Image (tube, rainbow, N blue to C red):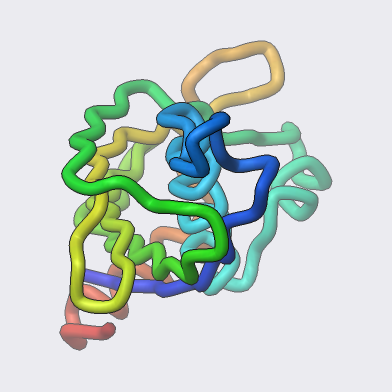
Length: 139
């Protein structure tokens, strides 16, 4: 498994009128985590668009469990663990923590697609990166 962590501060714009993070914003936090996890392969989303044919990622399935609320000014850690990368898909297990407290989890299936929406194999650089990490027990 390959793991990446990022920090996110909760701002007023992330919350509802009670100062608690609005549930849909967790999806944005998870997206940022996946983007950074993908970036560690050496390719970013802009690089995918420069490929022939241009490629993108689309969430195919997301299952979220909300455990505890995050609140305004909290500093959170988003952990993204790639558990599978093969063919046209990547599978992530993601968690959001505030210190030692687990606030939310997500299981996410991502599809690599052409800009026309057709499945496309993950770029070789991505597969090579994850195969090396999985073989070496990389973290």
